[in-house]
Image 1: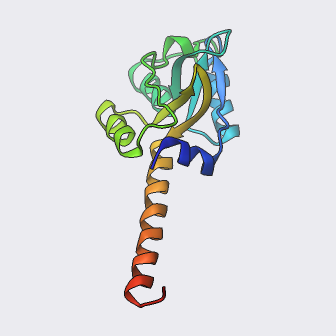
Image 2: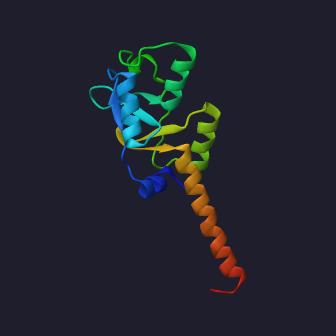
Length: 144
């Protein structure tokens, strides 16, 4: 299974923001869009970071910041791990686990084509496993 297959199922919509967005505005965007991360882009749409729920929690726990004036560029993760549509889900899952990230933007030819989360991967794996189990049961029961 590839990232492309997951994107076909879930869609390619990515919620983005820019570096000059405040933490409060970014949190409001995540809440209203019901997502756990925003891809932060520069003026040309190139990914420059990811701002996540974890970043908010870390700032609250480690610092007392003013969410109305602190910018996402000051707290976002700047080491963006990029996925490609043809990447194998098992490989990407391993990278996400090793690097302790929950979201990976997907680029194709320098263009943003989607973003997947660890939840998307789990959902796809469960669906695939259910599909295989159903067909194995049918095979065993002689329903072919």
